[in-house]
Amino acid sequence: MDPNAAPAALRAAAQPPAWLPAPGHPGPPAPGHSAPPAPEPLVRRLLVPLGTLAAVVAAFTYVGAVDPNHPGHYPVCPLYAVTGIYCPGCGGLRSAHAVAHGDFAAAIGDNALAVVGYGVFAVVMVVWLIRAVQGRSARFTIPPALWWGIGTVALVFSVLRNLPVGSFLAP
Image 1 (cartoon, rainbow, N blue to C red):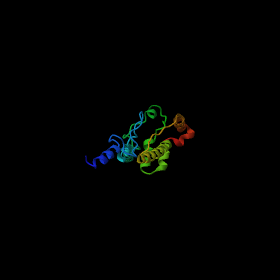
Image 2 (image 1 turned 135 degrees about the horizontal axis):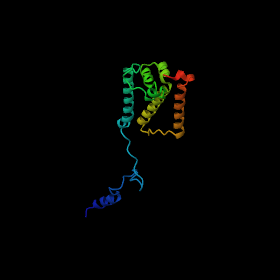
Image 3 (image 1 turned 90 degrees about the vertical axis):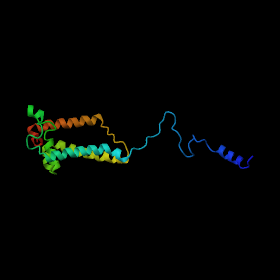
Image 4 (image 1 turned 180 degrees about the vertical axis):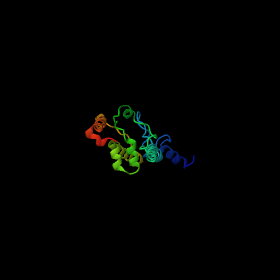
């Protein structure tokens, strides 16, 4: 018998089997738990927010190039065409055109509520992009009370802009 064979056999017996994780490795997940998913690559995380931003920039570019103040390029608001009442969105395209040209005073005069919406959208986009870069979830949950508040503001805005006292809000 080889004198070196016994120590090699002892060394092999002291080694853990190959199917066991290496020392320091957490090992397989516990039953009923899955391993955390690997983070997505940065390009994939940015795909949806940058695609959304590109679509909005393209829309603003188009509205900035094709003036809604000249008839024939955009459809007429159906509510205004039938009843003569301004809806919360009336003047929104003219407002977007003014924002695209940097004329914020005219934008507010055309549709102040839309300008507030553009600002809220910009903030949401910045938060979304920052969270995507950090690899965090970009879920935004809006409580029902806030939805009711937004609806109430839109309703009051609509009613007020159709009254003589709120004519300054009409487009």
